[in-house]
Length: 111
Image 1 (cartoon, rainbow, N blue to C red):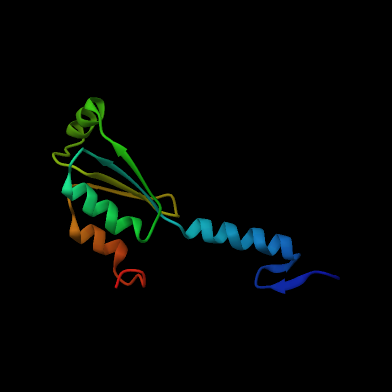
Image 2: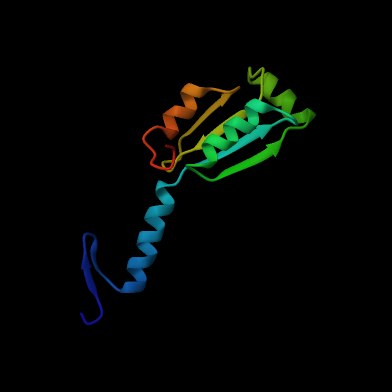
């Protein structure tokens, strides 16, 4: 088994180990998609806080988005969706400090 290394999941080459470790890091990563409107302080604040701990994609909402959100019961911006590593997601609207803290508390980058 020359060139192979024993790790917790078996004997692997350095290349395989690097790939497995990268995939493991990817699985643990959450991502946020935030629909915003122009000149929205609550939107900017939400983006600022969440982007410090996870990748954030922002989309400026258009009339179709507003209509879709109204049908879902959302009445204010931003509309935030957090996609978690396990495939689950969390969604809310407005500046929800409680929800933001749920994801940011305990993270060393927010001091």
